[in-house]
Image 1 (cartoon, rainbow over the protein chains, first blue to last red):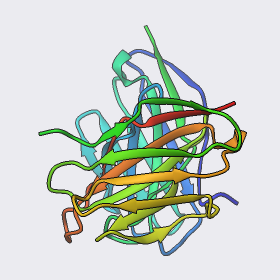
Image 2: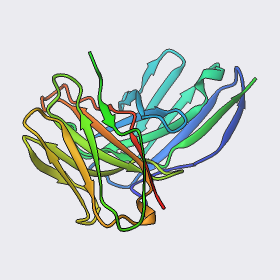
Image 3: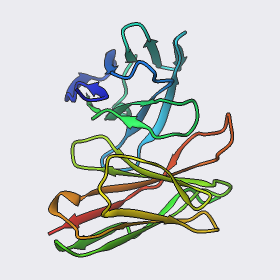
Image 4: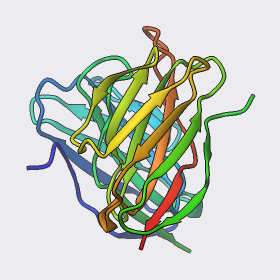
Length: 111
Length: 114
């Protein structure tokens, strides 16, 4: 079983729609959780951290469910510029220890 | 302020050859991590360097080795290249300071092994 599992997609969503991704992780000792965004073979960039209380950044909302060991990302009012691969990331420490990435979910927003 | 810089951007090698990739961390950062990203996969952790020593290592064979220099820059060396080593190699830097561990990635080196 992979440490971090994501549905690879692709998700093809019309502009303005709401889309949600889920991710599951296997290591119950995992401490820190993130969503990264990666555009077409460029470097991954941190989109947002994920907290148990849930957190929101504009149109993006992230949730963590420790009991079920899954993480979610919700994108509201999707824009063409949201087209990218979204990577679920987990670490076993609070610091800058190794990041464990999922395979990523590919999202395409359709005009 | 320059971010993380990697060189070269692209590289073509043949099986059995050796390759060296280079990374300069973001100004003020002292920790460098290397990741391998095969096509269609997420990045996989290779190893991390801090204070010129390998601090953590992922599940990669000894053909993968590295070095960190006193100025915090780093090299990744891969010996006896295999076709399966073709990937995007990403360098990430950070500060080894509690509460300030955000990783910054370079744009990567695309390695093709023929």
